[in-house]
Image (cartoon, rainbow, N blue to C red; front, top):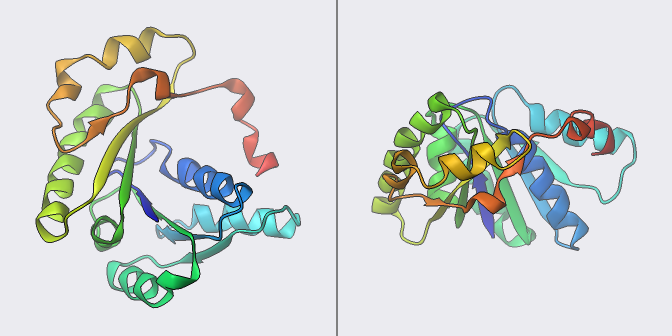
Length: 190
């Protein structure tokens, strides 16, 4: 399965979600390849830190910052992996567009803030574009970085603001990823 974690908006937790998803799949016994499609290279740095600390299971990771490279590498290595997770930077780029064309599933993390929700317009358009080229892309918007407690989750989810994104399945509020102070040092446990 190929999963892209993408949003044109930066700072919504794409890389954290991609790394954690890769780790969860590897812990489940899957052979996972994480592609860092962002020039910042944060996913690559996180996996390198895990490797240097000799954390198990190991996760294969490569960095390709442009779409043609991502497309070529995925096509070349497709049969070698159970799961390929593609993390792309927070902007419309060739890397993001290639990930949308290649992915079976798209996860679009968004924070419960106006600017982040507004950016879903861009992602919905990109999903429509990708679906015009390739059938079968499943796209899910996942609330991320919600403050603890139900208020942000339950008031935003039924909002008409979210319901207009017909291209994206908005995950129910009980699937929201909360912002917890306990998680701020989580990188130490990757």
